[in-house]
Length: 524
Image 1 (cartoon, rainbow, N blue to C red):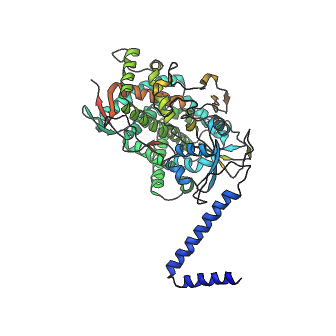
Image 2 (tube, rainbow, N blue to C red):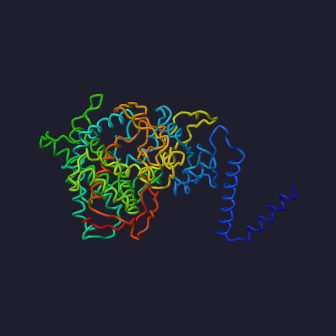
Image 3 (cartoon, helix red, strand yellow):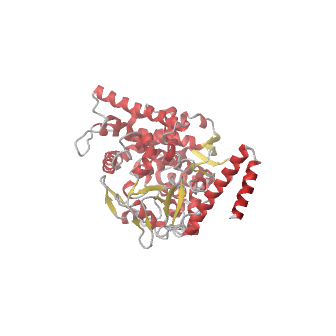
């Protein structure tokens, strides 16, 4: 007891000699040390053996948030090497359990509604961007009905009409774009690809009347909407931050464009349109309630946004990859000449099937540059993991990272190499154990048969009930854009190298770090 009193006396004497700010600093440092010490002690001594191992971290609330956010794919692979396919990390104070590999993809993405929920995770991000009463701001059953409404714009007949529209939009864009004046130049290509994807999608999916109201300024509004998906908005979606103010302004502005168009059509008694807006204006839910105008506007925003961030990013990566491999760009041009004729007639939907390398460019780019690196689900009931002793509790969030299997040497030889020819059947780099779409189990969640696809190592469009319904449109759009650009230009890296720029993970959607400059020159 005397020793303790002696220590306390020395501490009191030391503290009395310090100024008030210094005393506060010592107390704060001591408090921080205790927090870190207890957090480490808890990880070392009190691990729950029925839950996956937790990634070591110093600070309880920050956890692995920073290292994960800097480079998610690297974070997943490094911790897979340490802990195996299943591990938990702390993300903004929340225990987040990652399950990698094809089994993990299926466990999470094909989880039952009673077990996993996307709405609880994403509504704080999507509702301010898309608007009320659509996508994750409504019950899952209603979302499935909304997906069914959208499918009218995603048929083969529709695609046949889209290809000439997309091709014309791309050609006219380059004719008027100041970045492509003259015979050659240097351009920050992601900006242009973002504009091209929004113009081609709005015209093809929503008709010429809606497209006529889109210009470069409206395209920038869609960029402002996209930035509403920044990860910090999981916690601060409500805060009056600069990007949130721009997000809300963009949402109101674009919604008004659609709402005004709907009112104009009703006032004019226009019934000759057969586009998606017209279809939604005449649609009703199963309970007989007609789709309200604000839901029509918000669904139209969601349809464009659902593809805009991923197609914009993917098309940018495609152009950057072609600039790093001019030989592939020339092979694409020769493919068109040989398959379609030296005069290169206007593109048709049927032509795309004759261009396997053009298709492979999209596949290979999506393999290496998955637009969404993390897919999350809230856990609604305790979930035993088959073949293990683990049970995932409802206090955890589940995370699927299907991009990890797409770069796994078990399935893809030389996985870090961008090589579109690997998708040819006789290629030495051909994917292993990759089932065809026809072999995948099909299921109807309420909007038509889709492939469950969870056991595939290649899932650029997700799997299960939330698999992207715009998958086929994205392929048609990206293939058409690439085919037209190849006809018009030759690309190379500014420094003549084969290097590729790094990835920006500031948003939930991976994109090239800007400026991402390439050198272009027109074809003779």
